[in-house]
Length: 82
Image 1: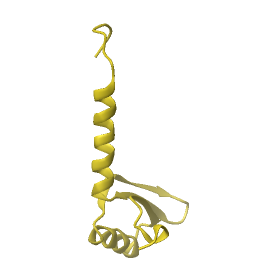
Image 2: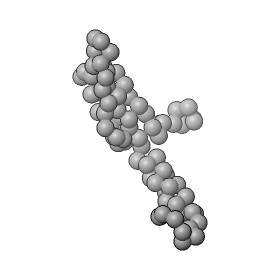
Image 3: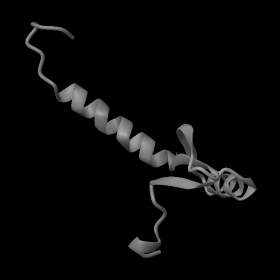
Image 4: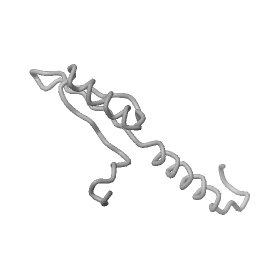
């Protein structure tokens, strides 16, 4: 699989809040994505438009590990607020 064919770690799926949107989210879940945060909706004057972020689990694990490493690398001199 080439780089441009590799699945994206993060996707923001948007569209009219209808059956087709739900199918797109369901398809992403079937591909191994997990929901990231709550869905958002807005009204454009005609249609309710929804947005849902999805991420691959390895992206969450890598992000969590990077944060943990950054926190571990912080120097604390015993002063100030923790």
